[in-house]
Length: 130
Image (tube, rainbow, N blue to C red; front, side, top):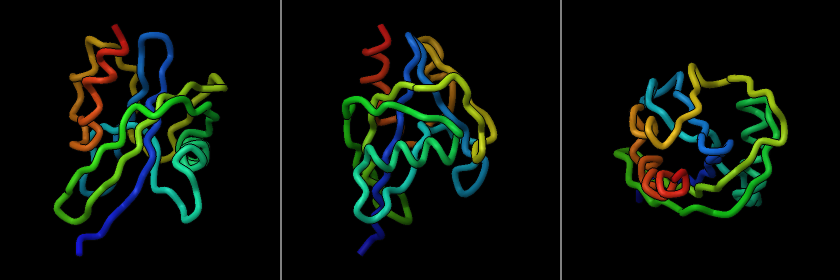
């Protein structure tokens, strides 16, 4: 049976912009994603997001509603990706794990190379940014 990984992703919104990060390591190095990460045993997606954003970005977020859960088969594993709207509760963001980051608008949303699973929610995000 294929390995199953469950992760939570933060779609951090600031007005009509959303925050995206570029992976600095691994098989998908240089691809773009929404920040977040694997859920620990017994952790809700929301709790995982608060912890991961603190670890990855030295930032605190308020987790809002679920945008959608994406199911995606990568070659080596199956991914369940819970994507939530989030808002920063602090001004500063510090990239601890990513090589780059950007605030994207509706016009620039598709200008970066998204990870396939993350790409699955771009239509909903684009609609929300109108």
